[in-house]
Amino acid sequence: MKRRHLLSLASAPLLTACATPPAPPAPSPTEAALGPAAPAPEAPAASAPVASVTAAPPREWRAAWVATVANIDWPSKPGLSAAAQQAEIRTLCDTAAGIGLNALILQVRTAADALYESRLEPWSDVLTGAQGQHPGYDPLGVWITEAHARGLELHAWFNPYRAQHSTARSAAADQHVSRAHPAWVKRYGDQLWMDPGEPAAAEHTLAVVRDCLSRYAVDGIHIDDYFYPYPVQDPTTKQEVDFPDEPSWQRYLSGGGSLARADWRRYNVNRLVQRLYALAHEVRPGTRVGVSPFGLPKPGARPAGISGFSQYDKLYADVELWLREGWLDYLAPQLYWPRAQTAQAFEPLLQAWRTLNPLGRPIHPGLFTSRINDTPQSWQPDEILGQIDSIRRLSPGSGHIHFSLVALAQNRKGVADALRLKAYAPAG
Image 1: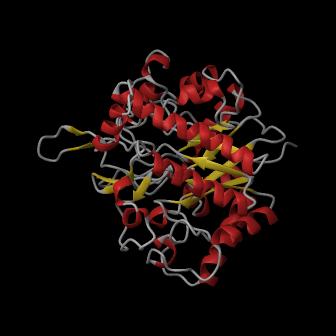
Image 2: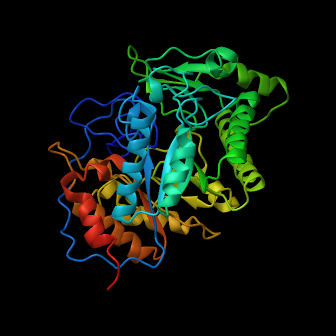
């Protein structure tokens, strides 16, 4: 995945791939430091110590996101030599395998760019510092080789609509969508987004995924929680700014469209997810398609006592529909809250997503492992071990995903050791 920002009562965006760094001391999730500044989160209650951890099932899916946007996980900084970047790949793969993971989810398209050889989009600036500049090797090819050599699956993580991240410092390459097709692209806050209501923009994203899948032996493709962007406020009026899709909306109406605007936006996203799923299985049968949405179901589908941000109403993501229709092979809801935070309680949310899953698709929750850091608000490793224990008790044989690999590579507060020696220790 991206994720995907720390949530205060789940009111601000998360993961998977994101916006501007929040002011200290708030940390950052799935694209860790990124997303509109959020209010300080509820101070989590101290978690009960994990006296023992439920034994791992024979094949539990244990993954980590490798976020490349803003150089969160890899490469450690732009401009490293090809040899240095490849050495970091090998080290990270060694770390993942040594801890006991069996899959990595590598962000290969951060903002209409590419971390692989592409004729459709320019090289990402996270590699060299300059968008469009060849890094001297094929990063995705090396990641696949090194991951597979260690028994790790490698899933390719795409951001379907973002066209420029708030941390971008490089000028856009001539080939970039913002220059080649400016009518598709809208500025929203401090980022650029391809308008989901532009049919040609959706076709372009699907063509990008088709091209990658047809040439690279990835084990899966993955999208996170960035559909329509998380809302931003006008700095003067403090009112929420609507996404500027008036031209595509008016064309829809003039063509006879009858949906309300919010339903039309959901239709645009639904159609992309449906087609992405069909495309992946057509081009590379056996590929697993994963979606990592915001962690709260829509308001009408939540357990009693759960409250917070509605992706259905704000991101126009009808995740419950995708589960019912089977337009994904696994769901990874970003459950980025401690078990004791009642308004976003971990176990009730996990159970809620399981009940919204009539086709029995695997549910692999995203865990906010990067919330273990050197701030006073840091979690302790036992919070992550406790969440894994909850998953094993309530959804045995499924799995989970860590956001993100950097927290494990740095072994923050000994979390990697705790996973290797406790949660992921072979049964004996």
